Image (cartoon, rainbow, N blue to C red; front, side, top):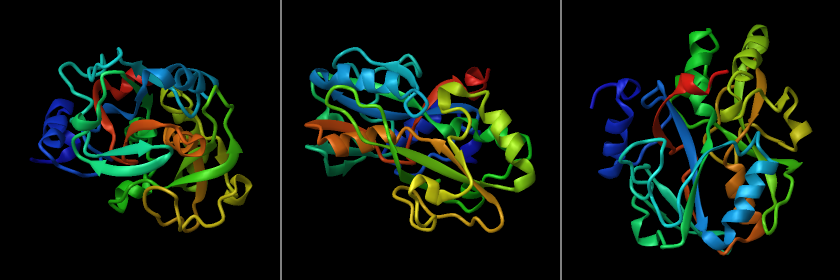
Length: 259
């Protein structure tokens, strides 16, 4: 297989299509990654409006045609099979975890691909900003916050954030670089005291894995898993999503989203 970071996006997707279930952090590192949420057509307008009203957490990169598993972000890709793992939701609860969502993909499904902060991590590393979860070989930690999103139709819920510990002298650099990636969450929504976000213990993330913080400053970015929090909080009838940390690897160079 070689170094996952050096793989083409197409090769990475082929491995996932073949059943490889792994976190995509660092995979095909020069390509953008995306969150996936697919809902029935009856819920699609509410989700589109929810994303529009909460753009920093839910920056849309593509919306599929009804029933189609194809996306302009990757020629020939199939959103039902080309991610490492999926969650199946009914009435706001996870009822299955699968590596092939084809049996659950209804004819009325609409897929939404939402920007992911993993996309800007190569730019951070090239600027000398360490990425702790990559160093420790784990999935980035994500937390449900006490900040409410702006509701849209049947959808509402809390903001979810991802956290990266940043050395104090590099915080300004991290903010400057990520601010240039507005389509993949942009600059942090909060820096410093996690309790201001309602996060009591950084060692117990709601999604992903804990990382060593030490003397670094915790920085928090809006996260596309906010859509999953809305599915849960709103008890949405049906949805298929990616497993947090197991993203859709696109053919789009990460630099495309740099402004």
